[in-house]
Image 1 (tube, rainbow, N blue to C red):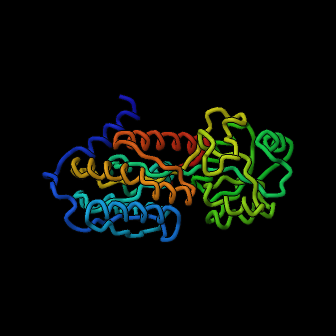
Image 2: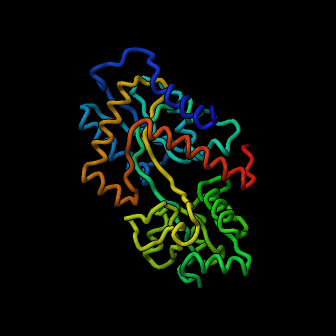
Image 3: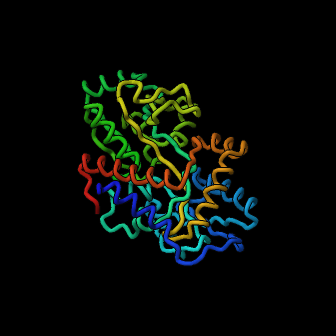
Length: 321
């Protein structure tokens, strides 16, 4: 059995073993939703929209519990260790689930073994940006310039999604650049805008206000297809980097061994909620592309993303600490 299949089998087993008979009246008390992101950020807003709709549909409040810290791993760990009864859920992030295993040798949880996937919710593309007054206007021009002159790139920190995305980009584009890490995207962006650092990758919602203000320009998006949220931006793949894809995502998961009947009920309700016009409009306002599907599909997606970022980290020479 391949490593990918073993991971997927573990994840699905974790979500189908019953510790006790699932209550037919679930939920009969409030449900806690752990959000490993500070209040007010896009992920937190999305979590509150979904939680509100689930509470209306299921007759019990879904209460947001923000537990930020350690690159989303703090709150994710709290969710992993919660009782597997359906009354604690966690917003699963690409950082805490897919990227973290490549960065931390002693990650206190296993995103496959310790969680039962419920559903993906939204996808956000990583976006290649430079200063608004930079002399290059598309990817071919930028790559040609990078081959003629030394360049620096900013990131939200060593091992961040922006860092690993850039390393994957450099490898595929066949160019080099010096990494200048910052403590977060909010510190990195001004350096790109001012031209002290030539480029960076960041999530589309984080850069679009600067792009619309003319302070940054988009050279390409990392989604497989042009995003309807900013359709004028071409993908990196259509500009010559065939198959390149770099996205972040946010989903909903539960502790492993949560009763399958509960997981199935939540998946069905989440899929109904994600189809509501008002929810889809809210996602668009946050620059998320709606995502949904079965529990099994989300499980496979997580396993594949862990493997992808593992390959990128290895190629970049990042050793888990």
